[in-house]
Amino acid sequence: MSGNESHEEGHPHHPSRRELEKRLKKEREAIEKNLESVEHVLVIMSGKGGVGKTTVSVNLALALAEDDDVGILDLDIHGPNVPEQLGVTEPPKGTPAGLFPLSGYRDVKVMSIGTMLEREDLPVLWRGPRKSGFIREILVKTRWGDLDYLIVDMPPGTGDEVMTALQMLPEDARNVLLVASPESLSFSDVVKAGEAVDKLKGELVGIVSNMHGIVCPECGSTIEYFSDDYSEKLAERFDTEVLARIPLDPEAKRKAEEEGKPFVIAAPDSRVSEAFSELAETVRDRI
Image (tube, rainbow, N blue to C red; front, side, top):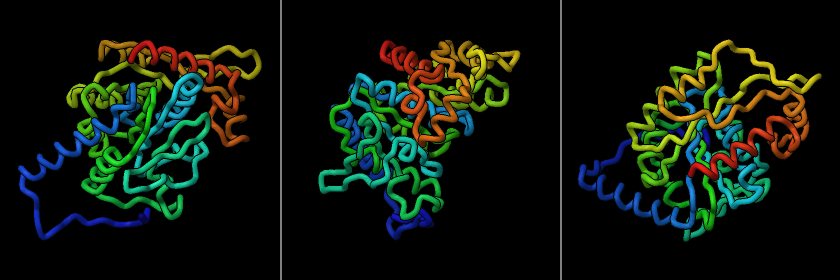
């Protein structure tokens, strides 16, 4: 497939409502069967770009993978960064039996459109129906094998991709972790994501406050730089809890960038990696 493909919907035969419902029912059954060997599914959402949702998804997956078998499904069609962060460059193995993901760091299995593009710098120019169709196809065809946890990294917003993914997942697989940042700017967008979870019959597991304070490179203490913690307001709004506060750690970030690897691999003893390890333990207790 080509990342610069422009897909225009249209076909001589427009399926009837009954045909569409039959097709969706068949796809949902296939997805449910496909996930029978997956113990837990955790969907990571934010409703907003720029809050570090993929960073949370990848580092949480790696923290869980210390003791468990983990996969990560990257559904961010326009910004698929998961493969690069996990060191996966090859496309999935396609066979008549389905698509088989490749493994990255700590044997985390990865499925993403990012490894299917002709070039990584090509944009994906697809309209909504094409994106929804791709997501359904990936959910139907990917053969995950035995997993303890499958992390689903959602795109920003609450549009077609998010709606399609949550509606196609079995209801008991719609556990959602909302990623926010502590400032007011992200509040309304993450509220919308939380409301979408409720309307789409998801189960909100909790809130992760990312970029929560900054670790002082001199003394190691965490400096809070916002007077109000809006992640707590989010938790109150949805009657849930802030499960983790992930700090900005300049030294860990420097090591991660130098090595081209996620925090928990490049800087395992850092405060940020410690926060992800604690989050992994909390997730094990919650779902």
